[in-house]
Length: 279
Image 1 (cartoon, rainbow, N blue to C red):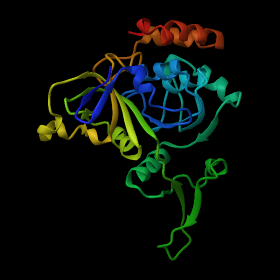
Image 2 (image 1 turned 135 degrees about the vertical axis):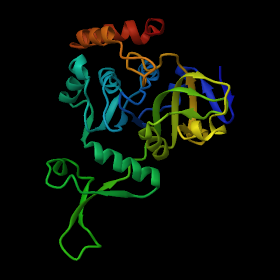
Image 3 (image 1 turned 180 degrees about the vertical axis):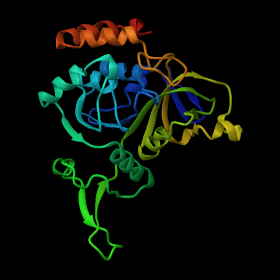
Image 4 (image 1 turned 60 degrees about the vertical axis):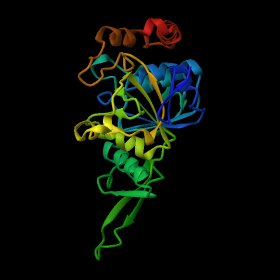
């Protein structure tokens, strides 16, 4: 059932996932910013394929599960890691099997290219990549001489990243479709660079986030939002800010099951296809 917050449609999770076509370019945030894991499971249920995922600037369980489910066509990132919760076995297996294209980057490079997308400019210069092997593997990155220098002064030009969708989870939206993102400025950069943002929230509150300077400073306005879904504990089993922490027992269970493709399939049967098990 769809309703409206101002001009922003409010969907169920599967309806929100249905807005994403095969081959879409999506931007996703790091674990500490708010990962839309409930929406990710809906994307896997939908059977999406050939996604181009841009990690801003890293990812973990989200991309790991998309890799295991065969949803990926391209991954652009500076790292994929589950940290202390184990190895990203399904991501590594899919990478070794060349099931998707890998575009290695660095954190500053991803941020710079996303900022170029948000500013509507074709590229962004960056120096820190000079002398690295990354330049050998990124033919889309170009080295030129600084046109404003009289001396030899090379600089790398990074093409702007313009995703179709920014996808993330936040604590709440207001009655007008504005979303509270606090101090997570990478979410702003993602939203500005993308055609639209698809957001899951813990709840929708009957407030106006733009009514005060204090709340407005941490708000992404509805102009950037293409759709919202209410999803209590929608980042689970990843943490959401200081609202709830990682589900360590579950992440350890995932790490054990995902060692094999058969184990990952059993995990998906239990925790992705069966929506109640993930609540």
